[in-house]
Length: 319
Image (cartoon, rainbow, N blue to C red; front, top):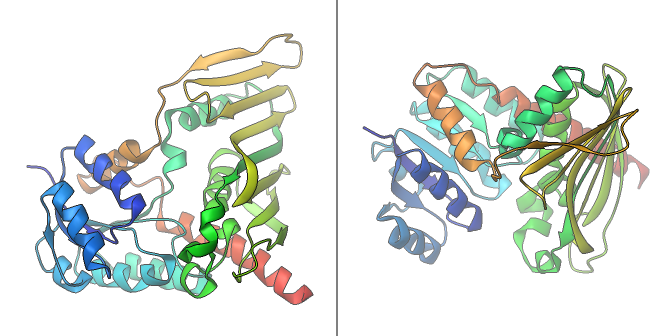
């Protein structure tokens, strides 16, 4: 029998979770949203029952939930699910701020349920192959890490993503949450961080363009770019090591490329194109069944929040 799933928050990202659950033979049986219209729409697409709030949803007998609300609502729903023994897949950023993330980590430690932050990018077959390439030393020791996730998203000015009280931050928190996790996943633990950011939108109170720079314990340094106001879209991971370079361009999703110092041409590794939701949910279910431990843990979510919060605090001190 497949798992019964509840969806808390029925916005756009919830559809990706629904598709991921379907690919893993799980049934979405319950949905809830502060917008009755959004909940009814997703229920119509899935055959799920609409519940008035997350408490009623948790009482319906679901095995796991996806929390797909804005960040300000993550902690409360996650705490309730963990207390009820319901497994949690929580969208990024994991929490509104690092303090909330640490409270969620404590709750997860005291629960029989599993908590997994939804860092889907680390589950892409391309990034799994990227990690192996680095672990095998194919391009030597990592020296420089560059990640760019940006594009024309000007409609964000009118959405909750650019309201600090709801989102917790701007494009750096929303987008570079994945970047920080990918750096830790591919390169190593972060020991230093700083950043620069700017607000182009006139009606918002968070950044809509920014750069994070980090340093790993092993000496590798990284730069991570994000923006809602970029006129052209870029999504890539580019790592230079002591023996060569490796590159994954999300717009050519079937190929991971690398080139050694002595190479004149790129070498190519074929990978299965994916956006990662199917694989991350498969990993969660495997952990629930006891087949393996979670490799994407609540602490990974906490560390991302700590790194980005530290950068926000540095910027606030300059004002």
